[in-house]
Amino acid sequence: MLKGFFHVPKAVNEPVKSYAPNSPEKAAVQAAYTTLWNSQIDVPLYIGNEEIRTGNTRTISAPHDHKHIVGTYHLAEKQHIEKAIANALESRTAWANMAWEQRAAIFLKAAELIAGPYRARINAATMIGQSKNIHQAEIDASCELIDFLRYNVEFMTQIYGDQPKSDSTTWNRLEYRPLEGFVYAITPFNFTAIAANLPASAAMMGNVVVWKPSDSQVFSAKIIIDVFKEAGVPDGVINVVFGDALMITDTVLASRDFAGVHFTGSTHVFKDIWAKIGANIHHYKTYPRIVGETGGKDFIIAHPSANVKQVATGITRGAFEFQGQKCSAASRAYVPQSLWPAVKEQLIADVKSMKMGSPEDFGNFITAVIHEGSFDKLAGFIDQAKKDADAEIIAGGNYDKSVGYFIEPTIIVTTNPKYTTMETELFGPVITIYVYEDAKWEETLELVDTTSEYALTGAVFSQDRYAIEVATTKLQNAAGNFYINDKPTGAVVGMQPFGGARASGTNDKAGSALNLLRWASPRTIKETFVTPEDYRYPFLG
Ligand SMILES: NC(=O)c1ccc[n+]([C@@H]2O[C@H](COP(=O)([O-])OP(=O)(O)OC[C@H]3O[C@@H](n4cnc5c(N)ncnc54)[C@H](O)[C@@H]3O)[C@@H](O)[C@H]2O)c1
Ligand SMILES: N[C@@H](CCC=O)C(=O)O
Image 1: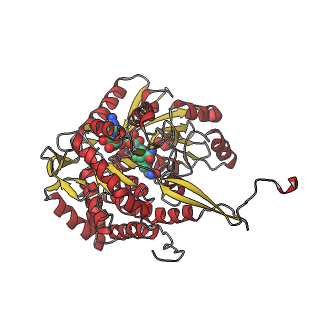
Image 2: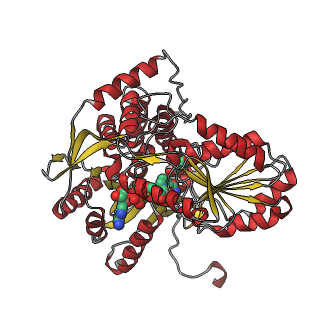
Image 3: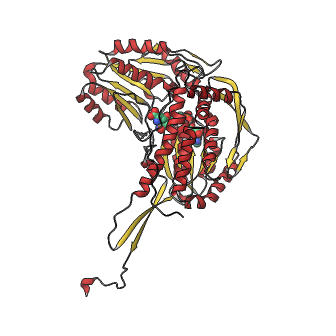
C-alpha cells in the first residue's frame, strides 16, 4: 500500500455549456442525438462480471414520440436479484479493503469521462429517454453528475480527516468502515445525476451495491453503466437490475445482509419500503440505514414589496422547467392582490411565448412528460379544475398524447387556499396560485406552512428585509431548501446541499458530507501507550 496523506484535486463546479448556434457542443450533441435516435440498444442486467439477457424484455421509447423505439432492456426474475446480492457480497471484502485513494481515482475519472468523451452522449440519451431540453439535460446529466462525483470525493476525504482528540497517553482514531452488508439504491426517472449518485455515493465509501434504476430512465442509465465500467468500478461493486419494483425490493429486503437503502422517488413508495424494513428488523445482521428523498409541494410566496418581473419569472421557471418534473418545482404560489394584475399579465404572456415540442428542436422550452400514467393523471387534474367553481385556468390547459405526452404549461388560479392542487404533488407543468389580501401576510405564511404534508423547497420574494426575516422564521420547517428572491429549483452541488423533511424525506442532503456519512459505520480505535498493570488507583497506595 502507498504511504502518504494524499490530497484530492479541489472540487470545482462544472461550467454549464451554452449550446449556442454554431457552438461545437451543439454540433456534438446533435450528432449524438441522431446516432442514439437511430440506435436499437439492448440493455442487459449487470451482475458481477456477467451481462445477463433474460429474454423477457420491455421497450424503451421517447416520451415526446412514444411510438419511436430506441431499444429494449431485460427484466430480472427473483433468482437474478438473489444472484446480484450474492455477487455484491462476494465483491465486498476486496472493495471495502481497497485504499480510499483508488476508489477516489475511479470516481474522479468517471467525472472527467462525463465532462469530456461521454458528455454529448449522456446529454443526448437524457434528451431522448427523459425528454429534457438541451439546457435541462446539460445541467442534470453532465454538470450535476460531474459535481456529485467531484465533491463527494472531497467530502469523503473531509470525513476521513475528521478525527477525535488524543493525548500523550492515548491515540484515538476513527475508522469510517463501509456498512456490513450491501446497499440497495432505488432511483427515480427524473434526474440522470441522481440515478448515478445514489449507487456511486455508497460505493465511493467502500460499499457494494444493488442498483435498481427507474423503468423510465434506462436509456441514460446505460450510459452511466458504460462510464462506471470505463472508469474502473470493479465487477460486482455496482450490480444493476431492472424489472418489477415490488419483487426486486421484497427480495432485497428479505436478505439478512441488507445494510441500507438509498432511495429517491415518491413518498408513498418510500413509506412502504420503510414499513417493510421495520417488519423485517429482527432478521437483519445490522440496523439498516434508511435514506430517502421524496416528494414535494414546493411554494413561492411573494410579499407586496416584491419585484413583479422577478416573481413572474420565478413562477414560470420554477414551475415549468423540465415540465415541472423536479421534486423542487414550484407548484403552489401565493401572490398579493396589489401585485396580481401585473404578475398575471406577465405570466400569461410568458406561457403564450413558450414553445412546446421535441427536445431535438433547441427552440422548444417545453417538451413531453415522462409517460402515459403521468399524462393521464395531469390531464385528470386539469379537467377537474375546468369544472370546479373555485378554480380557473388562466393559461394552458390543453394536452395531447397522439405523438408524445404533451401537457401545456398550465396555471390554475384558485379562491380556495386548500384546493386539491394546492396540496397534492402532481409532478408536471401545472402550478396553482392563490391571491391573498396584502394585509394578510402573516396569515398567509401560516397557510403556506400548514397546507401540505411536504417540506422540500420554497421561496420568498420581497424587497422588504423585515418581511424576509419573518418569512424565514415562520417557514423554518416548511422547506429543507429555502430561497430568497430566487426560484425554488436548481440547487447546485457544493453550494446548496439538497433535501427536505416532513413527508419530503430523511433530509440527508444529497451532495454533502452529511449524506456520505450515512454510508459509513465508524469504528473508534483507542490505543493506550503505557497500559496499567495494577488495578489499584494511585491514591489507594
Ligand atoms: N426529494 C428529492 O430529492 C427528489 C428528487 C427527485 C425525485 N423525487 C421524487 O420522485 C418522484 C418522481 O420520480 P418517480 O416517478 O421515478 O418516482 P417513483 O416513486 O414512481 O419511482 C422511484 C423508484 O422507485 C421504484 N418503485 C416504484 N414503486 C415501487 C415499490 N412499490 N417498491 C419499491 N420500489 C418502487 C421505481 O421503479 C423507481 O426506481 C416525485 O415524487 C419526486 O418528488 C424526489
Ligand atoms: N436538486 C434539484 C431537484 C432534484 C429533484 O428532482 C433542484 O434543486 O432543482
